[in-house]
Image (cartoon, rainbow, N blue to C red; front, side, top):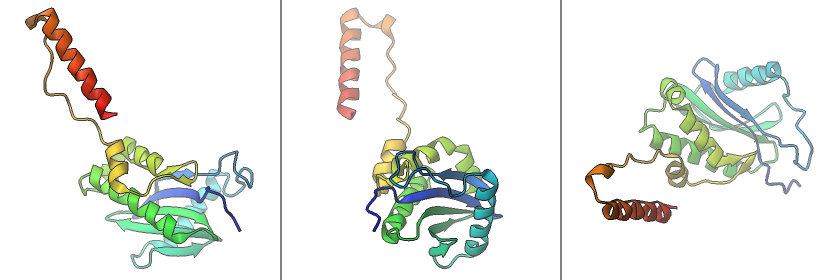
Length: 185
């Protein structure tokens, strides 16, 4: 029985033609089973992704066992999101992590989750992924928490013009802004 926290082997986003949009393979050096020998080469990864896409390109089921790995996936317009785990992993946990990631991306991209929008906002998508999975360990399964950690801060609408204020007013304004920022943390 594997009681390790390392439950995710890979995270993939493939487009409607099976091409890689984003891929992240996990197995840190500190893993109890050692460094991954599965799919070390890009050629092997691409072959795995192509075969996986062939099996899952049509919407229907959302969990399959492929090539000795558990693949949990979700379709979104012209993209398919995948979380790949070992054959003995908890599919409910993998599914809830994928759902949280997918919902967070939908929140951040305002339900415009398509290939172009994902590529244009790849920084936010990668931050979402890092907030959901860290080195193969699922760390968050709440989509609103993930989205709130990733979302860009709103621009401050009250700009400070120092030359129009006295020194004391400027000091007070800066002090209030610093207190607001500290309270937000």
